[in-house]
Length: 192
Image (cartoon, rainbow, N blue to C red):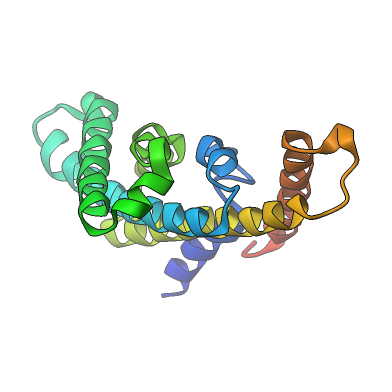
């Protein structure tokens, strides 16, 4: 149980995919302008990332390896991720057309979010069991969501702040992302 807690905290805070490993930066910058959109994107990415990592683990260990096709793991993982994203997009479109419109192009871009593929490949490379892979994916997804939501809240506050003209817009967003990354660097001593 302690090992699972360490995996969760490690993926959530210590090795955060956005701020420590710099994966998933496109939605991090693109969707974080609005708090509500960031929360929705975070939940959609959490669902896709967790389900994709679990399905990738099962497909690799129970289909590809027994058939001697382990070298096809990246192609298989990309197909799994694209399928899960398509399912998620259809679900969001039918349940909440307004949310689907707010997420816009970023919802189908979860397919190309390198953090989603990165979690599946890193879990495979670390030799995690299915349960460990699921905990790792949940931690990574919650870390991604937390950073996305915190950064969206920061950007909304920055819109009303007195920022020098040279730093308005993208420059202050990037400076804020750097400071947020430094704050998460403080978790580096946990667990070790």
